[in-house]
Length: 400
Ligand SMILES: Nc1ncnc2c1ncn2[C@@H]1O[C@H](COP(=O)(O)OP(=O)(O)O)[C@@H](O)[C@H]1O
Ligand SMILES: [Mg+2]
Image 1 (cartoon, rainbow, N blue to C red):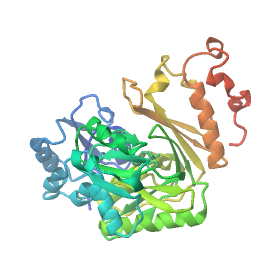
Image 2: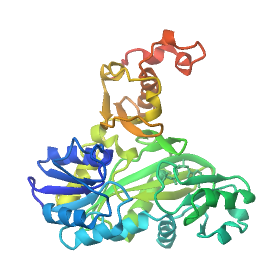
Image 3: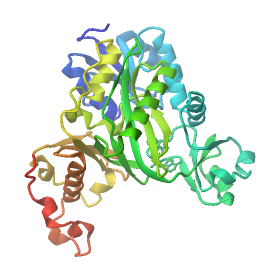
Image 4: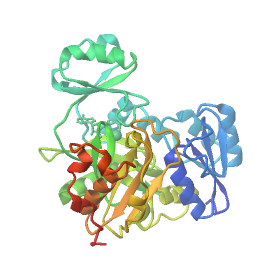
């Protein structure tokens, strides 16, 4: 057990490390992050930033020397880092879980072997493999095995002849081709598993993506209970099969025929679990701290229905945000990650709204987000999407 006051380490310094640090600080821990960028999102939130590439062995040694336990906030950490650090101090997750989840082919092989359903797929490791026919997998999606996130490293394949050029465009690197499935909804199961194999499951959010990036999560998911139960069962099976320790997210597709498919797993807190910060008795980040420190898992009970919307860089295309629009709304919680450059697609922050129901909270958030860009209605052409949102979307909420 690592008592409060100790130094916890996190490999990676993005927004997930930042929110991990906030949770750790609340419990009295100190935090060291390792990240190559001096102005990473976690920089202002941690006690110490070791500024070095994630594959820097001297930095691993320094983490092992100065931290009592170490976790990760991204899959793009070399598994060797966790293996090395894990020889000196506790790590969660372990190198094996990271190795499985950071490589799509290995992940799909592991998942199918564990008896959970995945999308039909093929190993596309060479130009030769990319020149063959896969009638059952087209239309499909070609995905790089490594380093994909937020829909990056993916190519949609509409016809067989597109496969080879897509493979070359993705850099002639190991890929998987998977069938494009008719989705009815997406959902994710976030859980924490401790070193004695006990599992705490969070309420399940339903997730909507835009251009491959998570846009909105609503929890509890307004989906059939049978699907949610099955997803929770599969997620627990995966956690046990990995002998997992830490916070794990399992992304699911609910197909139009009612079948459930595991899309991918993330060995860390997940964007779709940000609602837990305000809506659950213990957040996914506090749970990560607790597991890492060998402390008891917290209650995951949800106290209010909730929704979360992401704030992506493109929202800033006309300038700064009109923050009072969200800050003056009761029941809404603004999170900004401290990033200075709002590149399109970049996750700059999110807003969570606690509401009388999850779908209503989501509706409010979408309207609020549209109100954020600091341009007035009068500045906009009448055809602007903002002007098409009915006025009563902006009425002060009377439900809360
Ligand atoms: N086989 C598929 N069929 C239909 N939609 C898919 C499929 N694979 C991915 N998608 C869509 O693209 C999104 C991102 O894909 P995903 O594999 O989760 O990559 P990332 O690692 O970027 O999150 C998914 O959440 C889903 O909306
Ligand atoms: Mg995904």
